[in-house]
Image (cartoon, rainbow over all chains, first blue to last red; front, side):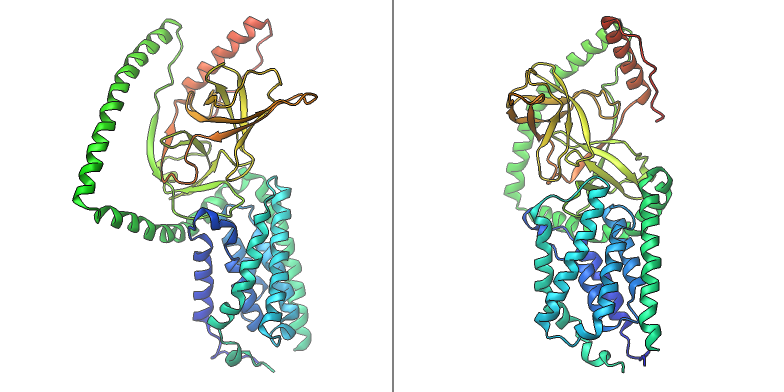
Length: 162
Length: 301
C-alpha cells in the first residue's frame, strides 16, 4: 500500500523549511497583509498527496514552530493547522482528483477556517485582528495554490496508493 | 486497513486538540512557561538570523559601493550636524549640572543617567496583527523582561520575552501596551495606550476639561517605574471633545520610527533610584493632599 522508496522525504523537509523562511521574510509595509499562508498551503498539499507521511501530527508540530516564530500564544497556530490538516485528510481522496480550480476553492475554504481559528484565539487573549486586511491572505494563498501544485508536482508519481 | 486509515486521524486530532488547549491555557500563565519560551526562541533564533543576514549584507554592500563624492558630501553634512548638536550638548551639560545640584539640595537621587546598549532589530516579519519586533540581543547580553527600548527619535516599547540570543519587543502600538505620559506644554498627565500596528496611540480617560491640543508633545512621565523619564513618546494628532461623553478622544502619533528603525537602544535604569524617587514624589503628593500614604511595593528588578 505504501511506497517507502518513493516518498520524497527530502522534498517534504525542504518545502516545510522554505515555508518557514517565507513566513518571516521581511516584506514592504504595504504588502504585509497579502503574505500567503505558506505553511498552511504546504501542509495542505502534502496532506492531500501523502496523508500517511505528512499527517496531523506533523501539521501540529509545524504550528508550534510558527507560534515560536511569531510569538503568539503557544498552541494557537498548532491547533489551527492540525484542524485544517484533519479536514483535508478526511477529504483528500476526493480533493486530489479535483481539477486545480476546484481544489483551489477547497484550499480557500480551509485557509479561511485556519485564519478564523487564529483570529478567534487572538481575540480571546485580548488582541483580535480587526483589520479587513486580515482576510487578504486567503486570496493570495488561493492564487498561489496552482503554482505550488506545479512546483511540488509529485502527485502523479507518488499519488497512487490503491 | 480501511478502518485504520479513517479512525487514526480522528483519534489523533482529538488528542492534539486537547493538547493544544492545555498548552494554550498553560501559556496564558506567562511566568510558568518562561523557560519553555526561552528554549523555543533559542530553537528558532538561527532561522531568524538566517533570514536577517542577507538583508544586513545588502545594506553593507550598498554602503561599500557608494561613490567617493557621495561619501564626501555625506561626511560634510554629518560634520555640520555634529557641530550643531555639540553646541546643543554644551547647553545640556550645563543644565544637567544644575539639575544635579538642585536634586542634591532636595536630597533625591538623580536617575536621568542610565546605561544604554545598542541593539539591532532583525529583518524578520511577525504576523501583521502583532506589534512586535525581534532584537539581536538576548539574555547573554543582560537583556531582561520589561526593559525599555528607544530609538533615535522616541520610545519604541519594552522587552516582553528574552531568549539566549534574541529578545522580543512589544511596541507601544500594541493594544496591550500603555505608557504614562505628560504633556510638555501643560504638564497634564495621561496614559497612552496602543490600538494596533500602524495605528496612532490613544490617550485614555482624559477628562473633557484637560488642556491638551493638537501638536502637543508628549514625554514619558516615568510613573510606571519602567520607562525612563522625559523621553518623547509622540505628538497629539487629533483631539475630539464630545459633549455628553465623559472623556475626550485623543490620538497620538508615535515619535519613534516604529516601522523603519533598525538600530535601537536598550536601556538599563538604576531601578532602586527610580523607586526611591517615585516614592518621595508620592509621599510629597499625599502630604499635599492629606491622604495617607499607601504601601508601595518596590520593583524586584
